[in-house]
Length: 135
Image (tube, rainbow, N blue to C red; front, top):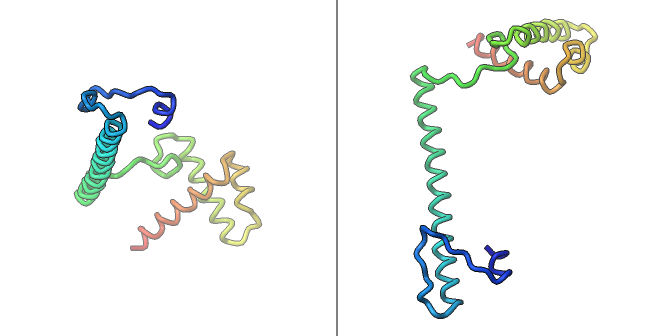
């Protein structure tokens, strides 16, 4: 808005009321800016309301067992057979590491051909699964 005004141009928005009948350009700019700020505020509030309602809908669907979220890319139920295999191998190697074998996480990731961050995600998902299984 400031860049347009700085160049001496005016912005006419078709679905906003026109204030061309107001002679004083400062008053016209003031009213136009107030209207635009009001529309921006209303749009932001609407967006936040939509996000809250979406979150509420997801929570209700989860309680009813209708929403499960996205399937993990690397996990025991991954649709990709190779990524399912990598998950199982990562779990096996992490178990060997926990039992005292001299393996670093970086070495495990390199052996499997995945990024260390991916191995950390697999480890976190595995830990979540063990917590759920214990409960």
